[in-house]
Length: 112
Length: 113
Image (cartoon, rainbow over all chains, first blue to last red; front, side, top):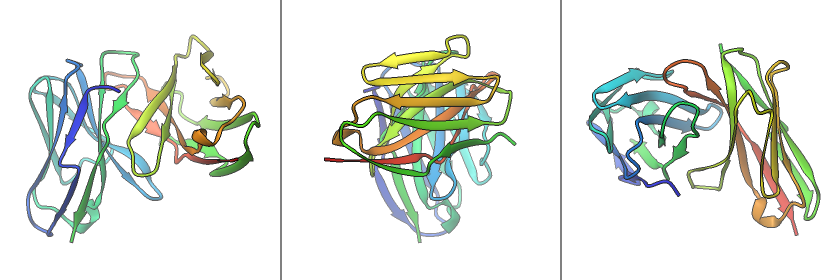
């Protein structure tokens, strides 16, 4: 398996609180992605990064921000969590163009 | 809007049967196709990535094909086993710097002993 660690694996929090999810890789891959998976919607891209300090928005980026200050870490922040952001969040990495994406084990986030 | 469709949504077969999972896509910006399996409560495991220039890729009992002109990909599983039971997802790889994935909603496969 690709060396991807997502933390925390599970989190329950309250509406309005800030939440940060971490994706850590040991592969030194250039590309990193955050997706969310919801019943009826499948997996959708939130944000992605194509290098340190280089990030861009995906399909469902509203309410989320990201940061990548070093190659191995990609952080996803919910500035003020809402119940609609209850989901399973997956991080993915990719070595370079035309290479496969590899996924972490996910973070299950519940916002009450 | 880019769309990826997987049919059927669920499939149940007896052990040993050969089977085909289908994936179709409507946007010409999708130029490669990646297949995954997902076990309940788990992450996605990459199975095969097919480049548009390749048309086919094989890994063990799995064979995936891609016909970009018709917007279709198939995943063929030979001699299915109970351990193959999982949800299979196809994802179109879009052209551009991000090469983001556009996912179908999956086919849930059950292989009965």
